[in-house]
Length: 128
Image (tube, rainbow, N blue to C red):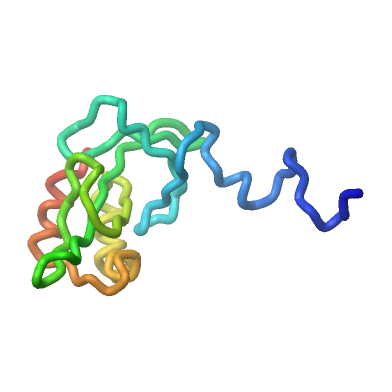
């Protein structure tokens, strides 16, 4: 017997409404918190990946922290397969600026500090 507190497969909870319609892992932008699903098989624009949301297509960037080096480095992950903890951003300059100002990239990477040059690389990789 199913309890009424259990969520049914067809529920319209808040979590389900933010979930993109496509399959695959769900990521969210550390700048604007928009949920998306990354499509690594799609063509890319420079370092930006194609992604889908409920609103349509989106270009996203991945930043990763590589901790196995002597000093942890935060790098722009251009192929999406780089080792280390990753954080995703919409490829929009507003999201990059917001994430940098609020230090949400640092929080998402569990304290790995990004170098100031990374901000310039992210802004150059933006699609806008």
